[in-house]
Amino acid sequence: MNKKIVLIEDNLEMRENIQEILELADYDVESAENGKRGVELVKSIQPDLILCDIMMPELDGYGVLHMVSKNTETASIPFIFLTAKSEKEDFRKGMNLGADDYLTKPFDDIQLLDAVERRIKRAEQFSSEYSNTSEGIGEFINDISSFTTLESLKEGKRTKKFKKKETIYFEGDYPNFLYFVSSGKVKCSKMNEDGKDFVTGLYKEGDFIGYMALIRDEEQDESAVALEDSEMLLIPRADFVQLLYSSKEVSSAFIKLLAGSVSTKQEELLNLAYDSVRKRVSDALVKLSETYDQTKDGNFTMAISRDDLAAIVGTATESVIRTLSEFKADGYITIKGSNITILKLEELKNFRF
Image (cartoon, rainbow, N blue to C red; front, side, top):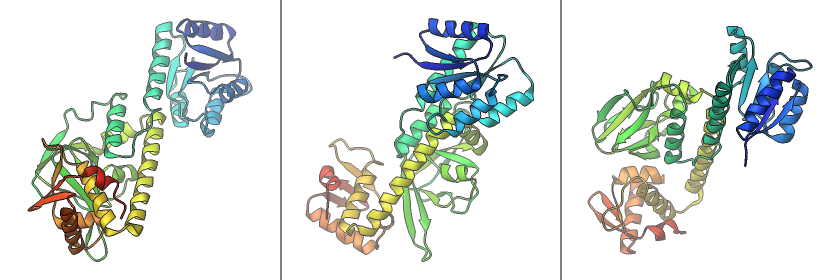
């Protein structure tokens, strides 16, 4: 299906010329001679892109952008201004209102088609839903890095090695970096009033951590510790913030991702409140299996202390030890020192009591 474009331009010759170029490039174009009619078209057609002149009768381009941005059904549609003005004030005003791009008249057909294709492609990139997992966050970061003028997030950035049990950052630290796990495994945890740790996340190679504090511009609300010898890539705060707020597509996609993360945390808290210890231990083992690689026999072997596992489950270490012994007797797992090997992953996934 051809992409749909709404063109809003009061100059008849200009409007017909742009429409002809776009239609020759296989875009479906609906045009309007003023801003008021343009807004009506956008609402009824729900196009893939809006091209809009600034100086128009009845409703100028700024008014169109304002009305489109305030409507939840049209706010995420890419918006390109067409203008004969090149003053910095006009560019600044448009960008503050949420414009994605500018084409300054006169422009040729290549400039027009390049801008249109680039913005539609960018919107398509972020139209898909990102899973609220560490993998989803990684996909999101990788996608937005390919659509910015920044260096690739991972190029030329500082790396730092951490020994097993070494703290990467403390709860209360000010966030200066986004952390990428280049190798190893990391746990994030919060400390309660009794001084006990509650594990909030487990991360492996390819995961990002520390991003929530960067977004909120607040101190870290959790600590991060290496579970084994690990190497972290340190991405400067300024790079990440510029990347995140580089466009409304990026911001919109990340908001959806965070909304999913909140839902997941709420579900985890409900499970802690109502599930049995056995069910919570089985869920924790399944979650850990996602962090560790399969062995040659297809099982998952993980090295984790009973204290850390208890912090994930949200119960006493003694209760975890007792439950693991029961799981071993039932044939779900084997235990050798601190290593736990899952023998029946599917059974643990479907564990109910």
